[in-house]
Image 1 (cartoon, rainbow, N blue to C red):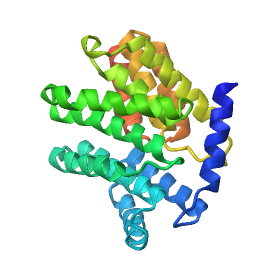
Image 2: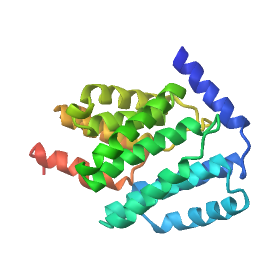
Image 3: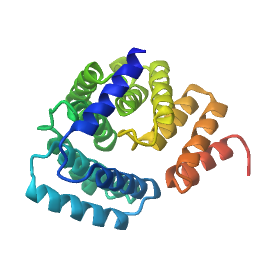
Length: 254
């Protein structure tokens, strides 16, 4: 019940916030940015980035626009990583994290904290384990703060789950708890009405759930999660072209 109430409060706050752009336009841009990431098409990000930058030029402190632009930077980083442009990816991730730092309003504050924590966690994977001494504690702190404010946000659950799955156990990682959080994130995403504000991340949460399941030895669970991710986005390149084929290869399927 507490989880449902918190989710409803999040929706009400989102709906009552002041946007520099119409909320429907915001949602459309967010969806297009996510789609570009999942199909790994940098060209599809360009138009959205230009539009957001134009709006930010007029209202540079708008928290919703700052969050959306940071998400676009994260998306650009994902595409750059897929193209092996690591330096470009790092620049986008660091820019996104800094852009989110001043976002502390009641609607976007927790989401900004969570995305910052997630980006720092991803930066460790890009920069290597040497960076974990500095970035790891900061990421954990930001995710913890986000969870204390918005424990039922599917993205907060998703980001925390990934952090626990990718962090070594000796440094606070917990595969079982990570799987639990990713399962919860996937369930919240799936139960939301179409009008709910928090959408991007559903396919990625399922993908990471599959990775965690595979890591735990549950190959059937991994396949089920990845097939669900493809049901959300049939053209999801990472799942379609890499993860599922690798599972087929490991299980001896042609």
